[in-house]
Image (cartoon, rainbow, N blue to C red; front, side, top):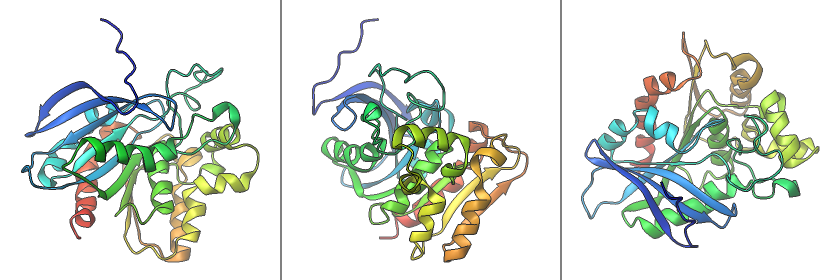
Length: 291
């Protein structure tokens, strides 16, 4: 198979298209000016009338994932079609830059962007925060006239749950609601977060707090939209990496409504996500369709 050429700036390249529940799964590629490399993203467009405007629900995936994991494994399209919501799943990091050490471990570098803007010069292309918040919505608006990117919500899993929560808390004017599956809610206090933040952001821990949901929630005591989190109690990362109790305590301290559902017997996998994905899409539909 011939290599796919790098798309020119401003171009969007269709890699695949599959019909599902009356809508379409598209996988697309473009040249990211934010990250300095080609990026893929997947989108599910639900069936709709040509005149309707479709709200957008962004999904952020976890460590080692690409834009395809959620689209292939979650089964979210059925509920998205029923609620007429578009699902958008970006990749999890820049790829193909060949930075020394970018692929040395599963929890840092390629596949591990942590949805932040790196300040360490070596990792200057790792700006997934700006990509998700700024560049990707513009790409969607430019190419999909039926999408209403001003009506947007965000959710994610593990590292992506961390990304969804922090992006929402820093941009409550841009997103109607947030939810997460097994999120890394207090990364400054877990090995995954400490490794990523020290390399991407440097040694100053006050800089890390800008990408920590448990720290950010203390500055956002005016949030009235409930936050939904599902967490399996048989998740092997629960005690050391995820720390949902820390986020729960922080929410209680400032009066932010949190629905933290501990799910007996469930682990960290997409089997867990697929079980409760309909609840999350229904949760977001209430707020995306309320205005």
